[in-house]
Image 1 (tube, rainbow, N blue to C red):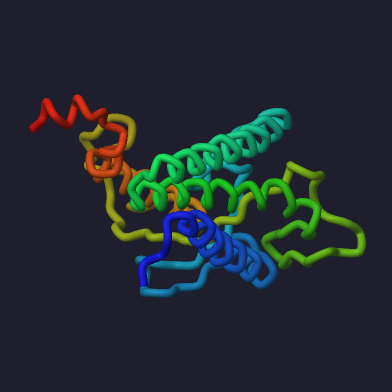
Image 2 (tube, rainbow, N blue to C red):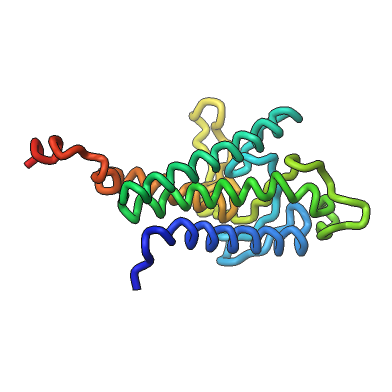
Length: 214
């Protein structure tokens, strides 16, 4: 059964947010910082870390930097939501609507962390798991929470050759960044958009353009 276009954004965002938030809450309330659980040998692990809000563990330093990042995300989600609405009105390709919805769902998932987690949870440490709604209050003010990451795919371990400048002799891991479901949704949406952009954006061609191509 094919899902009607008007339901694609709602379904996509709901599923991504559900999986993203459930996985984050389970990890945050059951694992300590730095704890890892092997899933498939050494190349896929659940590894709990937190960051200040950027994808794949990157950070935007400074108190005001964190606030600006949170506010920027909120504005971006509003803009993306408006864009999805216009895509539906223009009868855009279902794949395009799905990809943009994945990006919006990923942004929303990390916004929920940075917006609410500081208020709802106690601080995660290397020796203690976080508590939901602690009596003494959360670890950070509204909009200042940390984003939970837990998916780690260290597929390849190796060492840079000695002749390489700067990194010669150092160990490397591919893929090093630790990420979450929200990051994966954003990355998937962007990559599929790039691969199928001609097909997805065909609806924007003017009739004159179509005639010329024929």
